[in-house]
Length: 468
Picture (cartoon, rainbow, N blue to C red):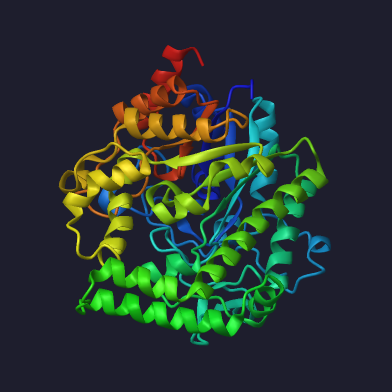
């Protein structure tokens, strides 16, 4: 990638609140942005609304300083011809401010007039996602028929990606974007939790809907053996969380249950493969619509904070189904994110190990070099070691074959007043760390609506010094 790429993630609310011309002028002239990564379809306030952490972070120095309860949905015009092979057809956002308006039709002409690219950004989960400002209700008729089913037979809280109607709907949604609008590509983020993720976080694993049962059988997994394995492992994780005594300790006992039930490992491998298949399908669909369109992967930070996920999601694979990747490295927020990830492991498999003692070891395992456990929430992660380190590691893992665009956190939502806050200096140092370690560009994230312009000024200062 030889072209300049300074992007920013932004939702419809900012353009409605501040006006398209005003927002684009500010981003281009003050911040140095030339790529708009625009949320178009979502039920998550973090993607489409105003700040979801204003009670902790305060309001930014632009926009409307009032809470906005978004109902969510599609902020695009209806194009029913793309959705004839799925029963999900009624999902346009009912929010009053965007009624009968199309966010891409509003933004694209003005962005083009300024020489700016427009790339819609889409992600899973779409509906219910802790920490992302989920809408209170999802008003899609019959959506419940597509929901996941856990091993106990209970309907879950997210649609099943194996359900043909839901998966076809995603295909239709991507084709609609690519064929109906003069866009430059798609940025796709997949943050669904695997059966192992579900176990570690206290959930009953799935999915065991009829479509998943058929896919398991076709993929060489015995569904009933997998169900029995899920039951035994779920029981272990519940016992571990409850503090029950294990003669051989929590880790050895957990490994024993896992190794005695290899059908769970087969299920986990099958789920991860099918999840990656969706990424590949969407990449191919975009290229079929127009080979010139870019397909970028917005990659979950849990993939470098969790040893299981780091093993399951190697960067090298993405060379086959992405034009570029964006590692999520929201430095000021990441201390709290890492602690949350490790707290789940220390409540179960690593229950017998003190977090403060384990942290230096886990850092070595994951390739991190950050503050001690007790200081991490307030310190966050350092731009030089974290943003720079992840950039360097990603480029190496990709053999330099894909451009790496670093996701720079700017006022990413905090969950506690004790969590490190963003500053202009953090953004400034992060931009320098990205480019000095080989990044092809940066993407300010996760949503302009919560970003302070004074913090974005830090990035603009770094870009000016770098001559970018």
